[in-house]
Image 1 (cartoon, rainbow, N blue to C red):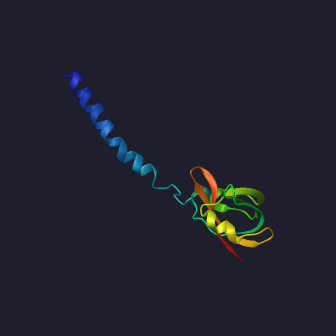
Image 2: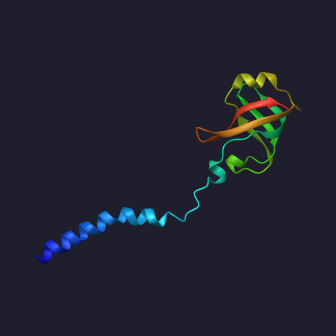
Image 3: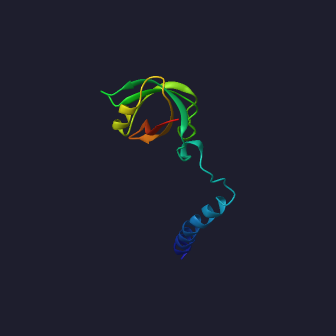
Length: 111
């Protein structure tokens, strides 16, 4: 009998855990973090176009959705055909996101 009561108490305690966990989340701030923010265009300047490798080197402002500060860096470009419209010194708006684990230019347009 004692064993049956212990088993019933254990089952009841286990089944009530999800309800307690849900209550604990009520006060949490569930706003997206910087890494979850939607991609937004960033002002940049083209420093180099690498057609052969599908990359562009940009001097860019902060990229909030990737948590990157302003810097000059080379990025792969999702639409490699867009590179044919770019030249060194062009002022552009570039939108970045993570593609296959790498920071990538997903859209680039002249300013």
